[in-house]
Length: 193
Image (cartoon, rainbow, N blue to C red; front, side, top):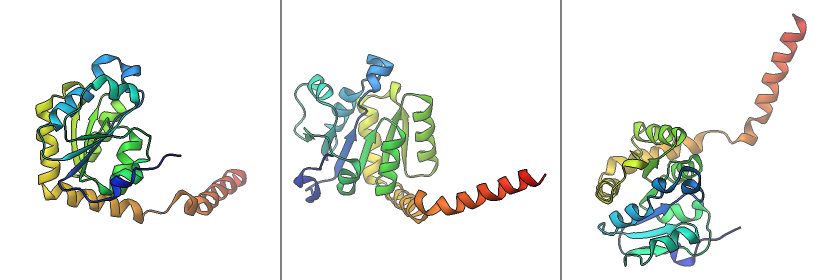
């Protein structure tokens, strides 16, 4: 379900930044967590093409978008969007963070919940991105942070290294026989005691 628009696979004439925003965050946490206006305002100051992946109601709440923002009007999988992006801004959810990790894309995680904050801290500790509190997010902080993602080669290098480490790991399907073997040995030891 869903497909990225054809233009996303074409090269951009400037860096491309994806903003992938939660479909339910502000419904769960209230209006203080609706930070898309601050993110878009901050990115209007960055020399980049901004791809906005947000639900229709959130896009409408933004009103007129800056000239450098291209909204997606249909849902598209992150794994189809991220490979052509130089950076991504998201809410710190595990799905967004791991999709960007597998793509090797430097990230700005703007967590609100404890899980999202912990995800962002792990990302920042790995040097593959930056983490800021969603509640403290301002346009200036977004512009500064995304500027760093685009300018600091070490962030991209660490994001690519994290990607390589992730794809070297066995898939869940490849682990099934190992896990079954471990469970059988544990069961045998328990039954023999």
